[in-house]
Length: 133
Image (cartoon, rainbow, N blue to C red):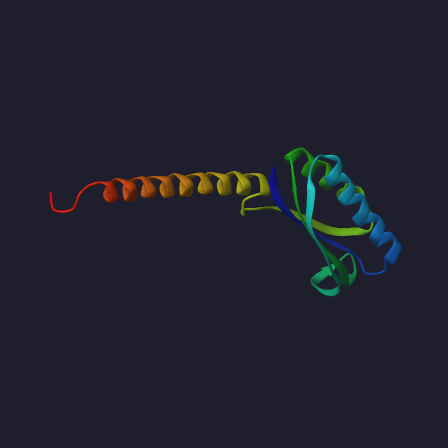
């Protein structure tokens, strides 16, 4: 699974309970597709860089998650038909996902253990041989 970042901008006049419902639906879509949410950060109401649909403000929501590509396609499909969502963008985060990170850490630990064993064997060989021969 890869890591993604989703930024949603919702209309400024959307009720708080509707914002929570949209976010919960997005999180549920991620988790149902064997993904996991890493971070979910509401940025709140912000001024838009340019006017969109007659509005100068929007409610920003950032979600960082790991999921298969099929889940991302489904999330984007749902967000496109959600009336309250003004804009959204999903980008792939180039940092390694948890599975790849765990595999790398296990490989590093094995390499360190092998190096320590080799160093211990060299030290034992050096201690066993007489000095000055």
